[in-house]
Image (cartoon, rainbow, N blue to C red):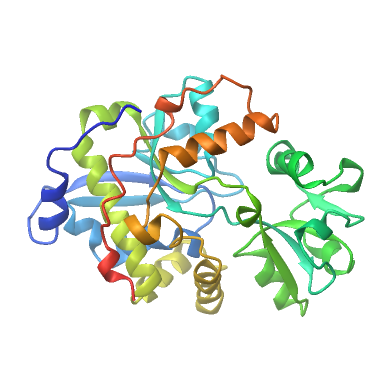
Length: 331
């Protein structure tokens, strides 16, 4: 695995809070509307962490009418918040010169949502007579579910990102973001069971940080500072005073409230989305090349990715993470 070594990384980590850097302007694009799942980045803006690392960060919010993904290779963004590793594999297959440099989520929040107590376990969920899955998901994790967990296409129903049909049908199940739809259902008085796909073998990294490959080669110090400051931001968001981040998120997305954001953080902690697995040993953002390779093989075996179409050496750069940075901030 090709790794780009950073000679001064430890120096930056040690002295970032005291050394005055020239402020580098950085634009970071998210993949959806501002929410708690983006909280560490907003935290790093709000509490001055990015500034301590010599960065002036402008967060460009994604959304239903905004696709930030092509803006990274086009040079309109400096960093991008990716989804899961399928996007990274797709970039490599298509010769797009971007690279994953950190994974904030150890577990993908993608889940299947069922009414409380209706299905005894995930295997039983496969027997649901109606399973609402969105079009894009039908070509990714749904295909994996049919190959590995016995789900059947005849039970598939199109999901239009409206939980109404699910709410009124006790036996129905649907795809869900583990920190979103369960909250919406609870607000309508419907208790649910969350089956997090990561707990059943959907072992992708998620909410990654991507950078242009050229930037990694030509300015690794900038990449390192952004990654490290983001990691510190996530620790402060998860375990410190996250009200400053809440306020910035609400300003960007007025549909958010303190109550909803706090509930999302509760789910992030309870489900081990951010701080679990390798992150417990090597810090938030941690990544393991072997896990990336294992997930690629699983996607090839499921027919989601063509075998031999992805060069793993081009998918991720692991030299910016796995240093244990910020673990002392965990409470």
